[in-house]
Image: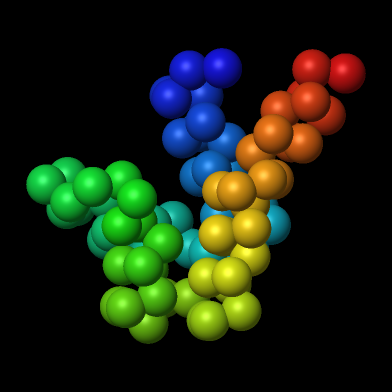
Length: 74
């Protein structure tokens, strides 16, 4: 899986699983100079997600994208 696919799955997770509004995601995406790894922290720092959601995002980044990609292949 390439990085574009992983990014798309990540955005899908944010919108569908965590119900983060597209406007909130777009706000953080306006900072392309920042490393992609900062994305979850920026969502939290701007008050766009809760600490619980931040933890779920880190869990997904560590493990979830692998299982979600396997489900999509089935």
